[in-house]
Image (cartoon, rainbow, N blue to C red; front, side):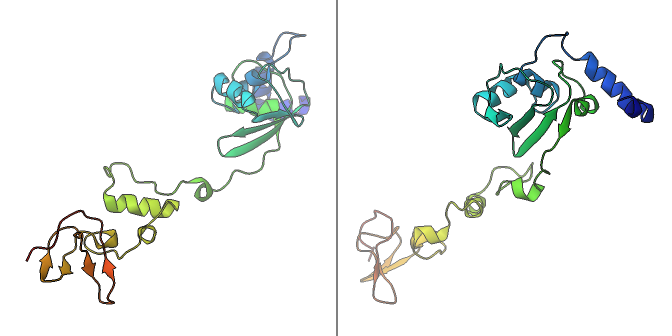
Length: 202
């Protein structure tokens, strides 16, 4: 620690600040307080919730928020989209700045995933307003929730299944949404449509 302080005054100041944030001699530090103090979580309540949800392990064991830490313990924490693995160097119970926080643990965490791997599909730019029906269909397709193929039929001016398109019935042209008689396709099959209209108008 002495050589570290002699080499970089900023590091020496951070170490002194970390030691000042430590508990009085003989007192323990709770895990939920420590992971908040060293900035692994944004709030202490989030730290307690992570412990209760089983997302915090100390030396491989799930722990409660009140678990007492010791120097040398390995802490594993699942925070948002990243796993943090740190070894406790100093026990502190007051939240400190990032330069001081990194002096309190040895960070063995894997590198964070690239942004492309965690960005959700269908994100729209700010200020573009509400999505249109076409935008929503495209977002559903990107999310794997569906698309025109799931509804069957042919996508035409009237939407999936040909609803709203003028259908040819015996004796004239219909303007409804596919009457009870339906319409006959080129292959001789009847497309019943989705509407509930009556027979085609003469």
